[in-house]
Amino acid sequence: MLDEALDLFLGSRCVGCDRPGRMLCPACRSGLSAEAAVAWPTPTPAGLAPPWATASYDGAVRALVVGHKDRGQWGHRRVLGDLLAVSVHAAVAGLDPAVPVLLVPVPSRPGAGRQRGYEATAALVRTAAARVRRTREVAVAPVVVSRGAADQAGLDARGRAANVHLSMHCPTPLLGRLARRHRTAWVVVCDDVVTTGATAREAQRALEAVGLAPVAIAAVAATRRRSTDR
Image (cartoon, rainbow, N blue to C red; front, top):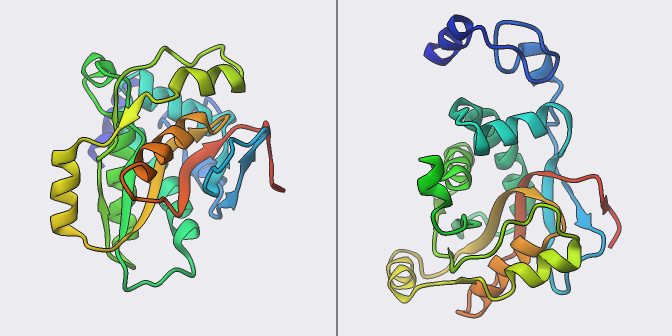
């Protein structure tokens, strides 16, 4: 309620239809997808775990993601976290519910979080975890760390893959704490958007290198440059 009152006070406009009043009006929110699907990027990085996404990265969803990540519109995390939770539910459907789910956020580039004052993807994953926790045991495990890579903007699929290759790792102290808390778990890599799949694949590689093979990728959205068939 406080966020809604603040939206009105600041003269916010809906990112979906540009109507005044709220950053996402009820009509536009009700139009968001409530189901996730596997969204293979084209071309698909070799060995990529099934990437699940709830929305297409366009329109209101794109505005929400950009606002949340780059413009300090942190209130969007609730809507985006709900969409991510739908992807997580779909990604682990059919897997033994007695085994906990570990959601691993794709890490930001070093310093990016400090510049924003906010770890955007990790915040979305925590919000999604709170939703998923209503039906099964889930934890957020930020065990993948970025060594650093250039900005991905403007790079094609091959350029993105080369840019992030070997840019992530799992520090031993983080893994030690994870091992003490969870002996077995389903590991799901989480991101806001699947574009070429290169970033998610690199996070997957870092986890596989320490014996943690993700069962899926879960994202809020995927770009339209994708195929539902492998």
